[in-house]
Amino acid sequence: MDDPAIGETLVAKEDLQRRVGELGREVSRDYAGRELVMVGVLKGAVLFLADLMRHIDVPCEIDFMAVSSYGSQTDSSGVVRILKDLDASIENRHVLIVEDIIDSGLTLHYLMRNLRARNPASLEVCALLTKPERLRVDLSPRYIGFEIPNRFAIGYGLDHAQRHRNLDFVAALVE
Ligand code: IMP
Ligand code: MG
Image (cartoon, rainbow, N blue to C red; front, top):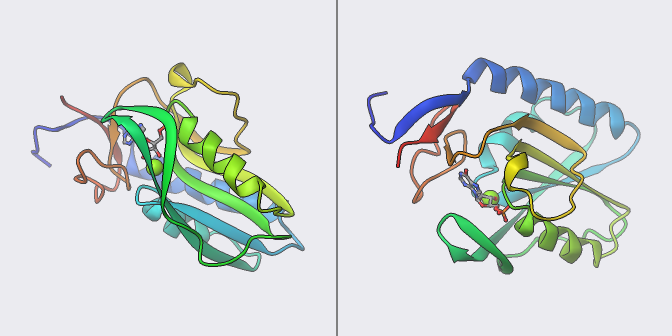
């Protein structure tokens, strides 16, 4: 692709496919004998969630939340607004939050607190990407796809100004 905004590849297509398969098998093993509710965080997690669930062989449902975090375009503030809430109750359900990327961790920290208050049977996180250098809160996601350097990432669901989500690999944005 010759779009000048698309910089170096951070995670290649083949690596995404392999790792998503591994994560799906790991989730299936860990949740054997249980029913799972996968909560996708819109919009970035949509591609990851769709691919991940093809590798999950325990009974599972999906639901979605949309949140917006106040702050500048590239820095979240930790103040999060729910734009779309879950359709169904998660009380006594095994919930796995599926996120595209953990940057400061503030969004997920808020989301976990919010969902934990609804008394799920269990609550875990599966994030495709993390930027360990940027993490500002204490989070221990159960499943992580890849650690990436402190670059703004686009592709495979991740956007910059709503674009580039359709790339089948993850690239660094050229700013
Ligand atoms: P946090 O609250 O700082 O962890 O930011 C989390 C949210 O910001 C993610 O769910 C993404 O939607 C967005 N975000 C953070 N870093 C990136 C990036 O490198 N590319 C695209 N979106 C990002
Ligand atoms: Mg997101």
